Length: 65
Image 1 (cartoon, rainbow, N blue to C red):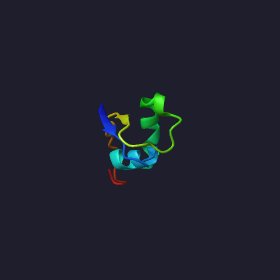
Image 2: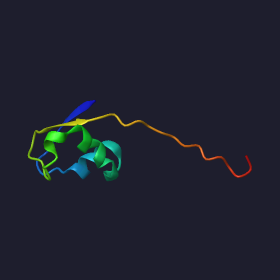
Image 3: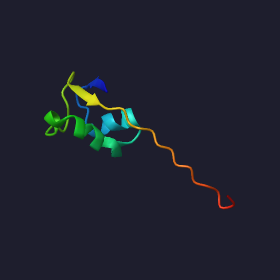
C-alpha cells in the first residue's frame, strides 16, 4: 500500500482519477481511509492510503471461437 500526500484543494475523485485512471474507483480510497470520510476537499500534506488495485483482464472470445 502506498501513502500519498495531498495537495491543497484536492478531492477524493481527483486522487482516484490520478491513481487508478477513473474517479469511479473512489470507493477503494474511502474504504482504506475511514478517518477522512468527512473530508470533501483536503488541505495540503494530508496522508492518504492508496491500496494497490488488482488488475483484471477479461478475454472475450471471438464469435468464431
